[in-house]
Image 1 (tube, helix red, strand yellow):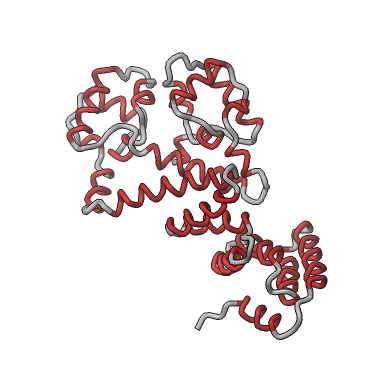
Image 2 (tube, rainbow, N blue to C red):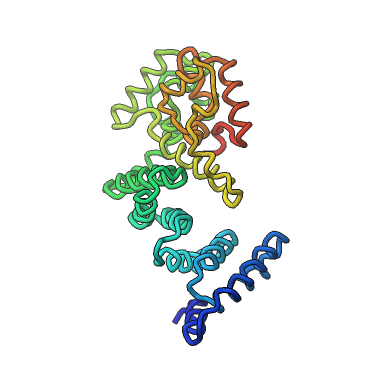
Length: 313
């Protein structure tokens, strides 16, 4: 039988009077140890805080967060859940718990946590950002679950593009772009292909017709790449307190009119949306040139962000 460390804490605490003052003292010591980089001492002090008061929401959340950062996910989840059972529910605990649930593909619980946050704080930027990702992941999972032959589909995506009846020019262009498989091809948009030297309309039409016969389309794999890119940036900022920057509107960048219009055409509304796109995707928009690209990169860099690269997929 698996033993939950907090069961002992609660059992001990319930056997005596709660001591909030002593609990607060241990929390202060835990924070000091954390600032000094001594995670073991910090965790020990948080546990002592919960021994003094097993229902202290601050100790519950901060110990859960500390364990979450160290990869102790199961215990972190247990603590987050107990933290959210209190009234009022701890908003950051609900958000962090939703992230763990999504990573475990438990989209219903993840969405439920975020809805609880948005009911009381409808403009919470982190909750709105993560809700968007959870819903997209859930939709993709549903599509995968309804596919009766997912193994055959994967095998099809792994099929070399040389197996398809394409002209020599189209094959040559794809080879130079390092597009080896059908799955590689689906991650490109029309604009990305057309931006490549010597790739013309005839080759594009040829490829689109080939994909259409298979019920596929260019850019089909981009949604997942964009979502993965957003999550990658979120993970990079985790623990820094800067995650909220991703939910800021692109209008905060104060871009030129030309650059703003290009982003509107791609339905880019937040900094996380922008960071999930490639340079080629932006350059494929009419009237978006090198000057606009430099402008976007510089403004993103001011916020510690950058555009997605194909190597990140």
